[in-house]
Image 1 (cartoon, rainbow, N blue to C red):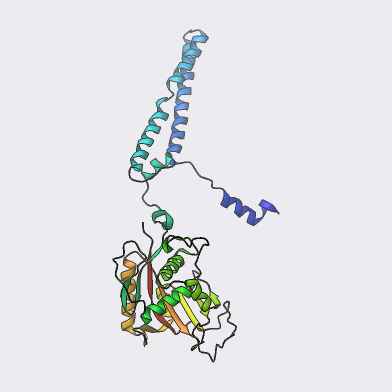
Image 2: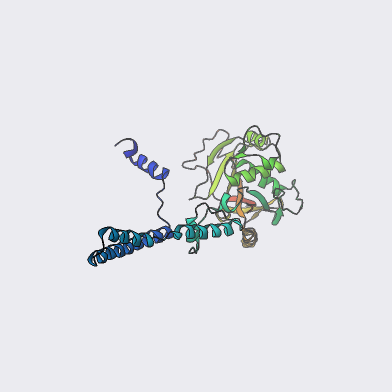
Length: 336
């Protein structure tokens, strides 16, 4: 087989076309027309035979036949159905619901569940960072339109550590030629969540791309639905501490499970039950606001085991992914 006859060709053909079935109202009208046609033909033929038997001229009998069939045609059906559907569609349009196909109006009347894509359909597809949790406190970010104007200390060790992870463990970047636009209005190449983190860090730190260049990425394990985390390893831009830095972000519960310590108030503490309870409370509060929450952690790799020039393997990780340091949470919202 070749071309469209191959497996890939058949898949492409199925993906390029959509075989839509008839709507319920179309099926009902089709059935009704068949029924009326049968009744009309039966009555017409019956009266034609009766007229012929009673001695009417054959031409008069044919006229009876045609007249009865035509009389049974529901001429007003099309206009009535169209007007009813149009009026219903107009009422729905007043509720900001655009009906592209009039036949779909009747189907909506018997619909109990609607499956819809959320991002960009029910929301604006403008993911922005709304809150951050570090140093055991929830902080409002300043990248959302409805933020209250609360300021946070961008010089605190907790924020610096969180910001560094969000900056380095991120693939998003601005599309070229947008230097004259505000940061929040620029288009970004990358995932919506990473774009939100990228813009937030650009506002908070500035020159995110410069920070990435100074902390060269030497290894990366991309996000996947199985692991539910993304991890990357970077060379340090600190001349006093040239050790590699491992940064990770992903589903908060998965990130927490890989951590043994937590960074609070500039100090690294054991991740005990009390801190896990604080994490759960923050996670539930941010999730209860309808926000997408990501967890962040890092780990400074020991130089004796991972010296400069060490060959990291992303396919079969030869670096630790357990016993990391939990830093904080960041939550994003996509306005409706």
